[in-house]
Image 1 (cartoon, rainbow over the protein chains, first blue to last red):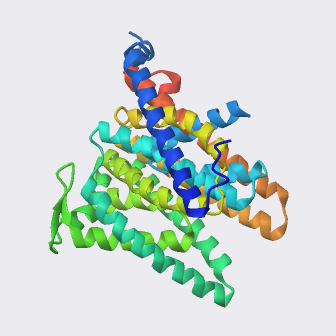
Image 2 (cartoon, each protein chain N blue to C red):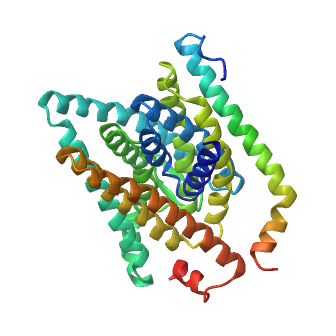
Image 3 (cartoon, chains in turn yellow, red):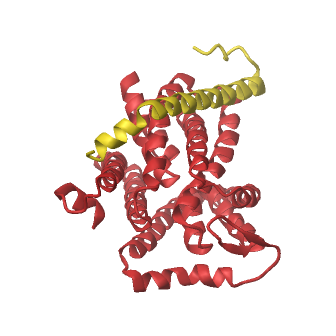
Length: 49
Length: 323
């Protein structure tokens, strides 16, 4: 799926850790953007305001 | 199946963001139950823990809840300690006693730390002074170099190193990440505030998770699609969990943490007994305990945070999480 199977052992390991790190950063930024956009509204709704 | 992985990731992310533990503890058994080979289950669990802890660490950093000095000293000490712990395991394997001793030690440690934390969470203000006595005594020992940590805590760097070394030995010996030992050691042993202990613990887990994932990925034992879907859920959960640490009282954090550890202790004991005596019911009980506790505790964390937002301590559900 990610095309890492053809790489050698260490290269495959570095690429795997890199893919996971890149996805984590991307999700952190994406959810951060989402949180800034609708976070206050959700917290107000949960807080009963 | 994608929805199951994303949902499961959300659950684990909430626990991880809140407690700084519970990643591989939950993912690895879940993947084993789904039929993945054990090396892939462990490797994918470690890769998932690495990804989730990156997000958790960034989130705790935003809240000012990471102490880099403490994390650096602990990481160096634990790395050395883990090598020592592995040597103990190899020695025990030579005697043929490794499995028995490791399992008994794992169950005993989980239960002991869980009971200690539970006692502290249930004690009133006067008793809490007794539990902070240890941290006060540790802070009064002035072995150079002295290190000032976040939250105004000043403690000997040599003692921090020694604590990290002992936890590292235990981690290497038990083959676990050590989050369940590191967090209480920082809180009770060094007197670090709970939220900072969680944030620093997660940063340390990021480093060890990266190393573990790298090791398993070298032999192709990481199922990247599974990790990717789990991360989609856990990234959101880690935000929820880390945000909840700012809303829920420290003593309540300790209560939930104790519940997770005690459920984990019973689950491991049940699983081992089931395997040794061939009783399937005990293995099922172990799975139910792990996932039931994860679901209940993450639900309680979210509920407690919502009750704080509403400033509600009297509603039926809110009373359950604030008593």
